[in-house]
Length: 251
Image (cartoon, rainbow, N blue to C red; front, side):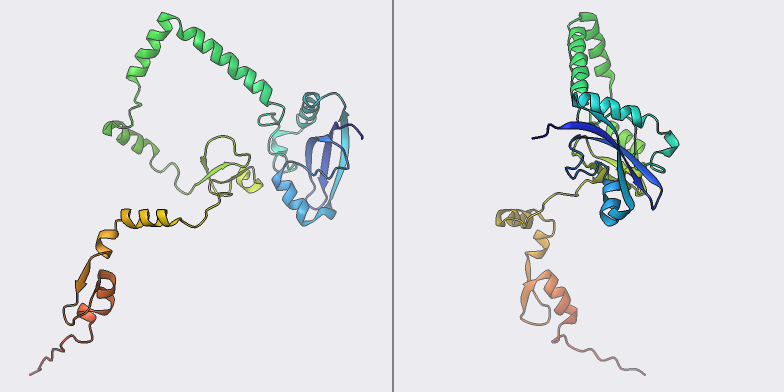
């Protein structure tokens, strides 16, 4: 069996004269396309317009492959991202081999923070700042202040999350390049919603603010019919067929 290796490739879209640079650890003929959803969608619609070329090979490890890919990505000008290239960014964040580095940095920060908090002076300053901070969400004054500061900021925006599932939800505009490329998706996309269970339906019926109104039965003002308020308002009372007709004499 042939051992896996890494290679950096470049795709060319002849229709839009657009490129994409990426890397892959595997084999050149294993069917891998790319990690860009934007480019994959275009490739799926018209594969005959795309041609790939291997521009570098790495046989050591994935970390070296990532560095080699970044060397090629750094040659792209900033104004060519999302225009002449399908690539959205040039940095390494979020890549499969960047996790170890991020983890080591977070561990270092954690160790330094714990060491600092063991110092009485630092601990005292931290508690003083914490006491002055407006972080009591139950305080009406704080809630009012936050409400005013956030009012109108997200008008016309939609709530999204990263397609990878990492990170928290945030707001973007409908024409945001990350949304168009598939880097971020609607926060509810991919969620499976099955039918409510009987227990859940019963809970909704009992907690609904219409429950008290719609469960009271009353008698029609003009006939012997007894029913719920919605039925009475639609077919009875003032609309009842047995309602006496009042004739008005003119002159």
